[in-house]
Image: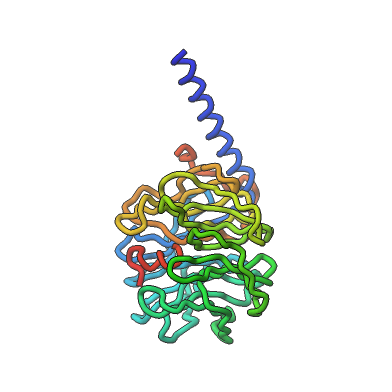
Length: 331
């Protein structure tokens, strides 16, 4: 009887891994979607890109500076990010998708972060703040060339809706952040969450119907949720005692990559993981090195390649809000 249970468990695990591999092969493989992210695996925080399954990890930045908050342009030819490479406060840069030709877009006395590119590729929304502890955060929108800055609202962590008409963001006081939605022109402000859990990192689904986000619960760990864009039908996706943070949707809406960490203050061991959009765990994407990975961003669309050109790697078996200011090396 004991052998029978173990054999059944083995068969169940085998089927689960096979179904995970099948899902990876038949959802994103034809699109060749990629994930850009930041890592502390080197002496300085750098930006990497990898395939949707964690393969072909490539380093894009190499300098003695802090490079973080990477986000794809809609056409996948550019990556916006923040850096202090000019020995100043964090400012916004844009580089080619291969890491070349970085161009600085912003200046001024406020730190920048939490980037999101508009769906038409014409604008970039971001958070700016004073001091190390995110004093007086504001969301600003600029043209993709850095011109025509427009202060949208008080708040942080903007996420543009797929139709470009609305921006979800986080706002609140005394660790009581909630998720709001505002028109891209600064009108029609609407609060979409109202419970006592602290919210952070809202992310629109590709079809615009849902928003994924992380919430700090009574057990004092961040967990991932998804809800309708109006705040209804909230569903908890993760249930482990560790932190689950910073969700990003695959371009087909079937997968969510996120940051997993047992701690967010001391030796966080933060790694990027992958699950289905209904919360079924698939695999760890980033390696088992000593560094941490943060701020993953799925490419908005895949590259035009044949479905057989990409296959998943063989290891299928295998805050942020104010919390962001307390992660390692944050400037």
